[in-house]
Image 1 (cartoon, rainbow over the protein chains, first blue to last red):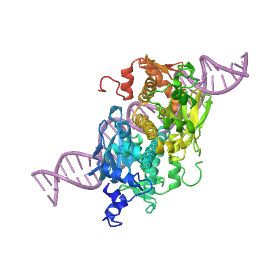
Image 2 (tube, rainbow over the protein chains, first blue to last red):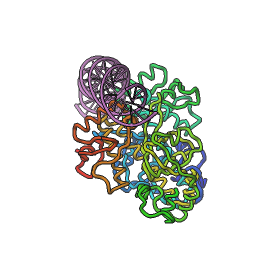
Image 3 (cartoon, each protein chain N blue to C red):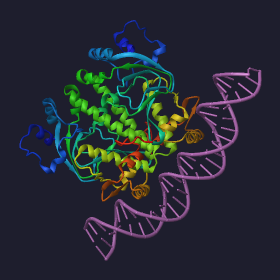
Image 4 (cartoon, chains in turn green, purple, red, blue):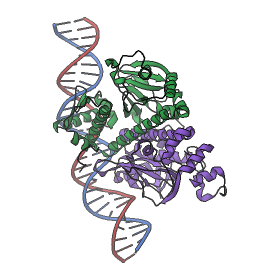
Length: 255
Length: 255
DNA sequence: CGCCAGATTGAAATCATTCAACCCCTGTGG
DNA sequence: CCACAGGGGTTGAATGATTTCAATCTGGCG
């Protein structure tokens, strides 16, 4: 949180330091422009900063007094474990986003969150949420919008899981993660982006097995649509990929 | 909304009229106990009341200036249409709930809402949401909690779609709808409840075909777990049904 | 009575899973 | 330096769950 405050108060932090470039505020950052009251609230709620290696737990299902996390750097993902120990990834979490809103509002956490890459996050007192609603309506509204955005993504994933075959599911995952990164960093998007998912994560997000993930990736690569190489996604035919995913791609209507 | 206000101001409405018994406030009602400020806001935002026959559109995907609906009576369901015209039901909506929060917060509606039964709803100006955040924090908080609750349900559905087979999916749907009704009306629950879904709705909610829905219902009935008869759900073995659905049923831990 | 939409059911086809094998890379200990 | 073990990743063949398609049945309704 030091970052957020420093950015607004402007003290001692040289502009454009590159090792925290991705901590710069983006359009969708929950802690974007803050009023004075918001800054105070956030500062008061800030507890400490943590770092996590990849694939480590941040929040565990069923925790009670869980805190709020602001992701500074790296990706995370949240998931539920269904019957039979099977894991369903619900969403991926990127820098500038908040984790634990649902738990703060409902009192219980029904999903776990793990780091996907190495991660830096700030820990906040969860009472920040209630305080925001009482005394910082703009911040509360951003919290609510963040919730609504997550809910919309969940609806999209639900739709592709319920309706789509393997290729459509994979196309959706690719487009979704690409677009989210492109929004955050509009400068760098020559149709390629980091894609730090292992087979297992794709499988657990899309309700498929690792083996079939692989066959599906093969198909997409052979068809010249997209490929994953060395943990990077390369999109070769964006309109076709978007059509497969059932997403409008600023182009021709879907048949 | 006349109902809500009447209930709190107590004018002219005889207590306990039975044709609107289900409009009585429940624990999860978004408009539950209101402060004076809330009442005023709600009254100002109230526009008109509407009635809908079953299977009629309430909100259509892509609408722009969509309004907020407070469901007085009857059920609705919201869905997205995925690639290939396939329909995915995201959630069912019961009396006392609000429809259109996501659209009010994000400005666009990415899903449609249809009535499932005959329906009575109150139409509210969507600016109520923004107003609530500015001047009625308790109401805003209930809006946010409602969003969070929907998001949680979406996560549960996602998990069962991604991880569960046909029987588990159906069990989940049954338990979920049963529990939501039991919460709203604790008095009537001898393990049976209304279940106004057609095969098609179950199919579209669970990502299966109508034919397979039928086979799955047969299995559950033959196994003495639960059955659907004449648009009512009858649960014969709640612990087993809950275990199938991967839900803790106030009883023995799942294996 | 005839019609139609939805429900029901069987048989064939399809998609995805399972399982087992193999490969490749990396880290580790001799 | 090499052997070895282990975790993914990659791939094929067999299995299984679900869909598709078509046919029949049912009940409501003009």
